[in-house]
Length: 278
Image 1 (tube, rainbow, N blue to C red):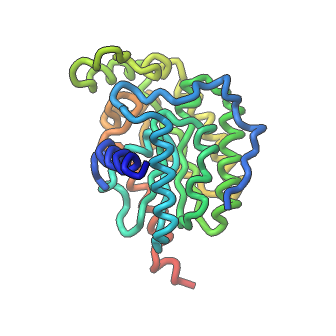
Image 2 (cartoon, rainbow, N blue to C red):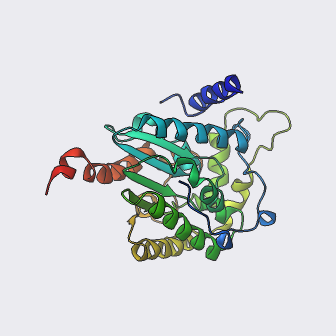
């Protein structure tokens, strides 16, 4: 088993580009499993299963809990967080990446306990686009966000919790962008177009803007921070800017550079210098 986990950990580093007391969950807000696939679709180029990702992230969180880094930040979310290049993240802190491709709000809510025993200074949460792709209702998504926030507040009372806005997508251009970003033919038996390529254009970006407004209100009500990234990533039509994306959904290096600039603002507020001021 140990050797198997080491192999998974090695795979994790390769897939990321080689850059580098649990609280109870209120099940009443969770969409029932029958309404969602048992495992998120990871796409043709993501070879690890959802359960393998869970094993890896659980082990990474446990290792961080044992090492007790002085300054720890957590990224919690889906593939947008997962593929954040390690070298692009603000320096001077330890980062625990708890992102999984295809993740939904219910999946994140259920696995927040993985890093219950860590002591983060800042927890950055971004989740929701996969809920919309799968047809999860806005009410369920909003309710799960509130439960995520309340869990984090209860378990990490000293941490700064940052709810990040859901990013826009490429609209009708997403399918074309995906095909252009794909190199070569997919492996035999793989669908050349993941489900999101077809479903994404059906989700109006105005719906995401309205949903972000609700998330900002929840953040204010729960007394946590809200980070509006959406406006930084939109073009004049309100879609995801082509230069900040690789395929109309996922981010390019320039996109992560924009995101990093906003993370640095929160990181600087929790620096040793700022914390020492009266």
